[in-house]
Length: 286
Image 1: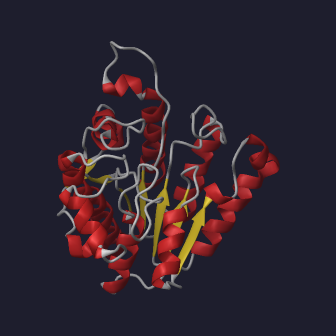
Image 2 (image 1 turned 135 degrees about the vertical axis):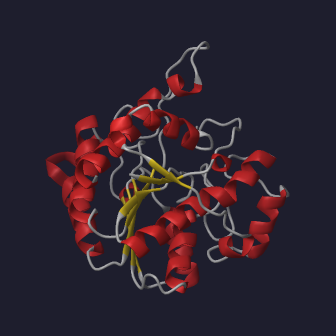
């Protein structure tokens, strides 16, 4: 499994969300499982001009310079420094997927609430949209699908699509349909996901947000069981894995209490869900 990672994309900051430092913890976890056969691939960070493909240029400048707050509500220079690498990972993964026609991983989070000129909900820049516009402008993809299985509505993605007048993106976000266990009864989630995949079958590239936060035990989720989460990933990989596909981590907020626990031990429930997604990638796609 090819994973687009550089240590610069992980940053420590004071926040309820572990997303800023999660890439490092996920990679350390996966490397402890040699059966995953991880191949880590480096990449170049995106430039401010590339971020401005989907964002107001002054907003980009203000965040990167520390004059404006990031999605964690602070002006931490470590977070600002990591942001070009976070989006850079997804851009590089998408380019590789398109050129080599395979499924790859970008261990990234914090995208879909960010709008054209605003941060929101632990999201600073919308790497999903920066990546989509970059691949379209490079002529590598004419039609792009985004299947967003973070539990929350990808409102920033929708706003940028409207702002830029884009008609070539298939955007499906589970957060606009499912808000609790009662919403996913009688196979409703599976039907929605199959329909989203059907609509993306003619896309040149699909970006899949394999969020951990839909899990029933997540404090901001409470929708899908562990078995349903695994079935979700299996369905995406079995139906879309033989074409250009990039998946990322998105949200996940379960925490184990304990002052003497390591960072990884504190978010072990989240790591376990991402571990299962990686395991299924390797099982189904090699």
